[in-house]
Image 1 (cartoon, helix red, strand yellow):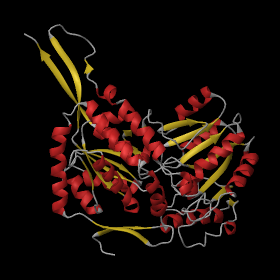
Image 2 (spheres, rainbow, N blue to C red; image 1 turned 120 degrees about the vertical axis):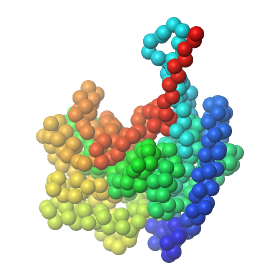
Image 3 (cartoon, rainbow, N blue to C red; image 1 turned 180 degrees about the vertical axis):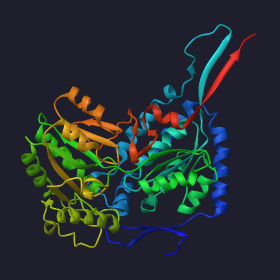
Image 4 (cartoon, rainbow, N blue to C red; image 1 turned 30 degrees about the vertical axis):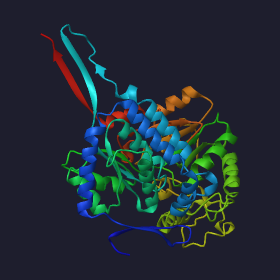
Length: 463
């Protein structure tokens, strides 16, 4: 494999699916120049016309769903029975379009002064770079692409090599919608080229979704360039099942929250703390549901659990499971019941672990795979302590019948989002953000527009 190519290896069979050459340096510079030129005109296009264009792009993208669903399965392993990502893509995009006018309106000064006109206007930052991950190739990218364009910016997209076709789909939809030439560009880039773009100050803002290590590399690359960053990084999201929880609902939702997409969800549940009152029932119910998964080829309708996106990701989870068992954890799922897991491919049987503790990597380090550890707790205080015992903080879920208790517990949790009786979902009206090693900045909600614009003050004196 040439080091000048981007290659996607399908987790279905380990074969090469897509190969694309990386861009030349001259092509990169030309793309940046074209984006800058397109931005100059786009920023002055009335917001209603921007909304019409972005909506046309969305419609063009949604029309590709029948082709996109099997592509996702081929690129990263999600079963076709789940129908892709476009329901969430549409929800987020249409919401961000709908709130653009209010989010971008002028902010008047808090007090009036006779003879003065004073206000703060929001101007686009200019050129936004989106570095998107493979686990939800459309949902993650749309979070920034739509508000960036609505705010008057130009956008460069670098998609993960594992989902390179998703980036090309975005470009096809933009072109079919008649988006101004150069305003949006999908780019095939190496890591070194991405670093050059950031370090050279060629873009004004970069939103990166990926690993903590990747986020640190982005920060290092952008150092000294004054490029603003939005970093959406790793997670180890916890759930707490209180004594007053609806236990059947908790079992059903938390198993789905832990194992959907083979556990490869940014806000997927990776560790569960259950009140001692419900512990045995919860474990029994969770194990029963997990044993019903069908591990296999994601292109087959019967499959409910596909392969992980790459064998190396499956190997990490295998190592975590083995370490936990070696330290005394109990593995409840017999991998031999999942014939597709032969031990050396991307196909990995799901696992439920008990007798776990925080000395085990499966309870501390990101797994991003189909495994979950369950611990018994005596009450809120112990659960809060354990939920906060993590270097990450993306989301946390509480199962309870007491809304006030959920809010009170949430105030003590070190996390970006607090859920009650649900998990693994992004509400576009709320900021998607994290604390600690999970990153900085916010996407979605009106706060997304603040990171994609800059304030400009007007102090106008009449004489």
